[in-house]
Length: 138
Image (cartoon, rainbow, N blue to C red; front, top):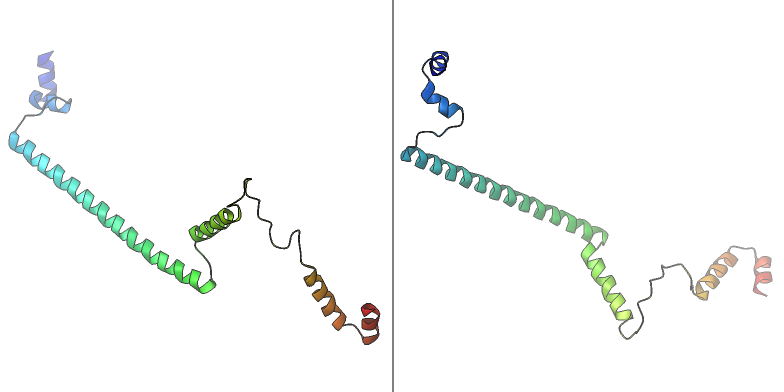
């Protein structure tokens, strides 16, 4: 069997062990060189990753400047600022209360001032002819 293998491989049985996953010749210089190359490769990868992260930090800073200019232009607030203000208002409202905080009622729902209704009626009366105005005022 050995003879047949040697003939088929052309006498390359020494290299056959390497091809099948066997151990390679252990040369300390080759192993040291490979180790140094691997360390250099790892350092290059770390450096590339740092450059990429730095690039993304710069891009995000530029985006934040643009976002802030838009907020200033349209009078908008950051999401965190809005949440902080709402939380402070809720805490202030229920500071001395023993029960849970009440839910906020949106504007235009529930209790409305009577003054608004009167002002609307007054504006409508201004557009009516004189006789109709007198009838409604009585």
